Length: 424
Image (cartoon, rainbow, N blue to C red; front, side, top):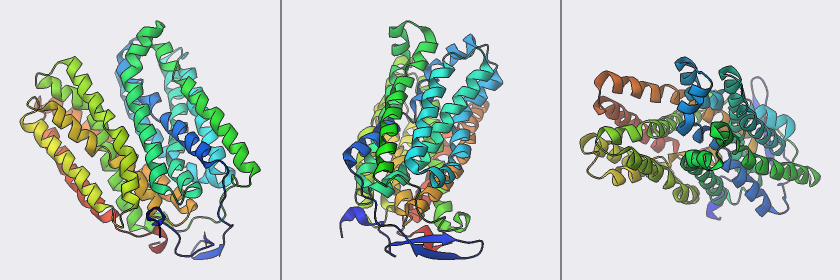
């Protein structure tokens, strides 16, 4: 059996149906045959590229936006927490929408929301409107976040690793490009923050056009309809779902803390602001190639726990370096943190491997990302509180090391070969 078919159904040609108390199985349709799968893979990659610029392009310009819109400190704090909240809450609606409309049409709606929200908020007259339009864009991202593993499972079951790697790499590129170019692009365009933020709607428009074409093509070929069957399991009764949910939450916490606080850690150690920005860019850039490699490797292994352990060990080594000698080898610590943050594509791959059906993956993806992003909300705030109280990074880095250790053991448990259909 090819390595990329490790998640193949144990019960061929059946789809499960859940009643109030029992789970039964009904005949499933024949495997979907999609014409021009390379074009669908391209559409996935372009959509993934658009899943972070709405957030990453705002961070470097937040002070300017806040001053221009007379935004209060409380609203600014809410704005920084808004991505995790929206990813958690709106992501839970994705499976229901996908069952009713089909995943391709749902991603179309997601890309439309991203494009409209990013474009319209650049014209926002006040803080409240800016916040609402940001939430619209984030809602589109949340739905698409959840459905990326579903689309891969449904249309590329024989290429789960490589295609997951493709869109993970594209997502990482979108994040790093938006963060690196936000300020230079705004300066080059000479239009202030409104132009600098709104220009990212152009990339969203390209993704929307591709997905409109894909949705029409898949529906014409009979491959875009909602999947047969309903939920395979009561997801809250699955031990694997909970393990993955907390695992996802801890890796998201580590990633948000890194993006939010790493430059400050280096600056407090005497590194210049310019070099601190370069170090953060190194941390983010290393994720692009590894995000392509790790999913392919993970699908070839019966147990993904060892990969999770190696990534966590890199994170622990980085925290130790930042705690004891941050300025001694800053590029080494930045590189190690970048490797540790590649737990994200590993988690997405495990979501695809832990269910036999695309419907199951939809339920699992929504649950894991919903729980995970909710867990990640307080992390960066708590780190800031510890930093302010101590006027240093000792306690904060100890906390992150403890969370990384927990993440290591959760990854070992969640990486075991099993499917949620066997646990509910």
